[in-house]
Each structure stands twice: as C-alpha cells, then as structure tokens.
Length: 327
Image (cartoon, rainbow, N blue to C red):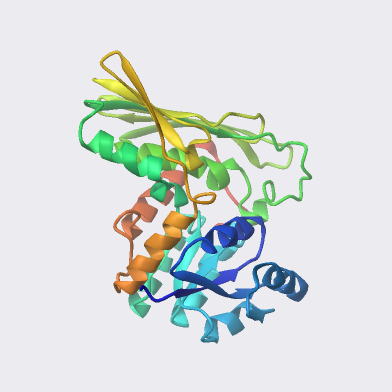
C-alpha cells in the first residue's frame, strides 16, 4: 500500500475548497494543515475538512512538520513570494496557475526549487484531465493527420461584479489573461507548441483592467484562434482539426468529460468522466513525483511553465496589459 502524502493548503478560498473536496477522494493523500492570514477563515476551513493543524500565518506552516507538500491557492501576486518561502523551508509546492505573473517570477521560482531540491509544479490541472490526455495521445499517434487548427474559448460574464473584485484589481494582476486566458493558451501550446507569430487585441474597463482578449497564434501550416472574456457567457468549447479529421472537446473544455472524434465521415463520441471535479489527477501526479523523488512532472514540466508564461508575456506586450507593481 502506498504511503499517504501529507498536504497543506495555503489560502483557503473557493478554489481551495474545490481542491480539498477532490483531495479527499485520493487514497494516498491526506489533508493535514491549512494556513490563512485570517485565523477564523483558516479555522472554518479546518472544521469543514477536519484538518488537524491550523495556522494564522504562512511561515508557521512552512516551518512546521505538518505537511509534505503545499498547495498555494492565493491570488496571483502572492504566488512567487509564498512558494519561495515554502521551498526554502524544504516544502514541496503545487502552485496555482499562473505560477508567477511574468517570466522573471517563474524563472526565479524554478531556480529556488532546484537549489533546495524540492518538487515544484504549476497547477495546470487540465493537463492531467483524462480526456485531454487521451486526445493528446490520439493527436500524437496521427489519428487527425497533420494537426493544423486549434480553437478554444473561455468566457463568463463578470462585469456586474464590483471593481474591487480580485478579477479586476490591477494590484492583484486582475484581468482575463492570467485568470482564464491561460486555459486556451495552454491548449494551443499543448497541441501545437510555441507559435512563430502572435496577434492579439484586448478591451479594457474604465479602471484599465483587461476584460476581453482575442488571439491568433500562427505556426508553419497551422493556426490557433483563442479567446478569453469577462464580457460574455460562453459554453467554453474547444476543438482541434487536422488533415484527416477533427476532435471536439465536451465543454467546458478545461474540465471536459469526453470528446467527439470525426474521421473518415464517421463520428464517435467517447465519455471519460472525471473522479470528482478533476483535481484528483494532478494530486496523484504530485504524489507519484514526490514518492519517486522527482523534482518536476514530465507531463507539465518547469520548461512548460516557462513557455506558457512567456506566451502570456508576449500577449500582454502586444495588447498593453501591465500591472502597477511591475517595473
């Protein structure tokens, strides 16, 4: 029987709740600690999930022997500092996406992970989704022929939310790109790699937050059309096309439960439902990596995180998205 990996949660917000619910479904994982700057919030979270160790400051958790790996689920702008402090204390880290707000931060985080010989991975949970893994295999096996098109759309209406919301707060790196645009960009990168040319245009709200971005990635013989938006609702579809056929991911594509394969005039629908919401698979990957003394995942490596954030940097440069705290 596999030994249980002890998990701690840093930042018990909504996404951490989803993560914790799924972690309870993983046999070789146990939730042993939680930390928040708000003691009551940490205590409430601990009571909900029966977590034995509760901390009202992050460093006390980092320095304790209550967890092997920490899931950092705070807003984007706190990722780098908290991950580095945790890793310097010897903790393995799964850091919510984006791992950092720009390439400089991500590169620094990876350097600290290597220096301290700890595991570090960006929580790109969609990479471990059973459907996306299967579709990647089909594409790699040439089922679609030469892949020449990827389309992905991630949008939900949020303009009725207050301007101080995390989604719009520029001091917290608000806007669609880092929060939800990362998903369609990830999908294009996963299947087509880094493009030779990027076109992108953004719309902004009254306080200067990017709220809608459309992108075209151009490759030799292929293109990806991508969108992220807080200005409209979307079914969040995604699809891939090649010289022999196409695949449509069941929406919402980042947590897809199956796909439809169209080849040679025939259509096949395949259902691959996730266990829980779908965080279980990245949790299992982290557990396996730590157990095998691997410092990174082969499915979503340090280099993948660097490539992804470099694409986000390039799009931001194209569209003029900057944050007040950046030099």
